[in-house]
Length: 431
Image 1: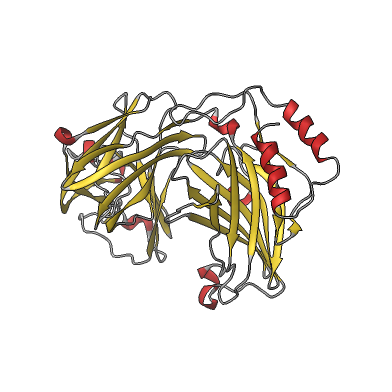
Image 2 (image 1 turned 90 degrees about the vertical axis):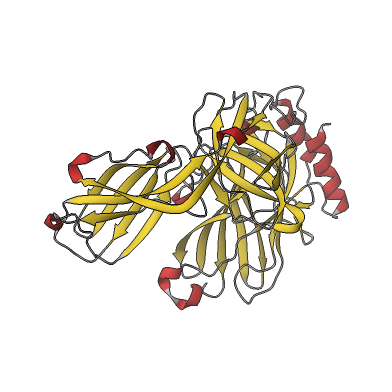
């Protein structure tokens, strides 16, 4: 009997949820199909396993079984469709649900590895689910879900949430949460909340056992516990992960401000664009923050963190529409405008960032459109920013009232004034 089998049976006894008839036989059959020697991977470099599946069990919730027996969950590259398509390379169907106060939470699927946990859920109500503020464009009034792993609360500062309204009574929810600590190969997870929608208190809780050895086999995980000091801040590198769902760096600091001014380079000198998840700080105790990065490799021997400084200023770079890609001498630590598509009601620019720049608390790329005299056109409207998760490029979309496209003769953008502090670089071993 292995750890997964033991924990399922122990949970059933502890929560007065009887083991279903035939449980032992089904469990033995499932375990026979798994590779020999399954154990918790090393917290440094996770061993490759032959298994391609993910196992989970929906256990007792409030004395009622969420699902009988063991759910065999198969890894499904590409997610579960809709807004979740392609969001988590390893994921599995669940289908367990719990109802309280006239609202039902159904966990359609879950993706788990050492970088992110992604939840695919449906929320339905006997009453219509309103939008925030009653306005259609604000989105449905639903709260993010909470997570516990091994009985410990998972800190998810700024978890990403996407939603899709199916009808007035149903919402599809996709939630992506960073994994701050190293999890065991078979992890006990609780997905729960006491408030699905505003002003309605209840108890929605679903328990799972998830075997994540399949994505672990394609992951690099390290816990360096390496400490360094930058600008008076004492910073500890708690975790580095390169997993199927992405890359993640966990830094902790005991400071009144988060650590944000740095770039990441791999052991081949390639800059890895990064972004932050809900930065927090505290002067009384060390708090951890999660930084997602793109482009990491599972065979990296090290990761280098290079601090940077800025004077807070920018300078304008301008050129004609046929002069793209457009940049200046600041390109090594700044932006390059790769492409620009100008339409009657919308203009879309794609920026590559190099060196210092990542999604920071100070800079994101911006651009303006110029007339034949080089003056910036006042078009009004609104802009949206999006990061391409594969390339790390910024996509900036400017929607404006209808205009005459022939007015546009050039483009400009603002380059930050930044400087790398190479003499303060810190190399983090990963093996």
